[in-house]
Image (cartoon, rainbow, N blue to C red):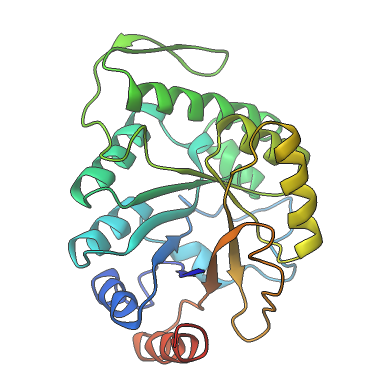
Length: 273
């Protein structure tokens, strides 16, 4: 089993240049960094988990800047968006950023994606929230074309470009793995059609078993799972190996540096020793 960490990168928590080496020194395999471009002041939908939206959602550092700093200060750590919101992003720039991260890190990029829960955030980017899943699907297909074709071309309802050159190409072949977040029917179809791995925020083995069976029926039997955002104090991993969970990514609160380091020590002592 591999063990990673999920941590919001903000201006108020541990710096990326400190975090990356701290993770490697303790034996963690990967870092997943969530993304929000901004948080609109008004909101229709509830915050994840209910209640008031935690402060760190408002203060995120750009995810690719964060991971580039971590790449420059580490040599083995997997560098993952967890999750990025490509529906809100320019597809060509995002493809270049992912490929560039993979290049400068020597092939360590992992592209975790989701539709995002914040409808107002999507709307501010000119995306109809009701269509953000369809937009994401097209952008994923277009990015794969950019990464894998010397002369890339894509024509869809939401993404449309004529033949073009876009470099660098990723180090990993055919491209950095796409980790699809979410457990809805639409997210699972996205996993089947565009994903290389599943990034569920549930830890129920029966759910894993059901999805594994469905993927097998769809001809995608080998898709690995990463249990995303797990509580290291409460997680029971019994049955994870059986259903193909390759990694657990533990949630770490984005607090002061000394407190993050203490938390990493405690998780490493329990799970990595």
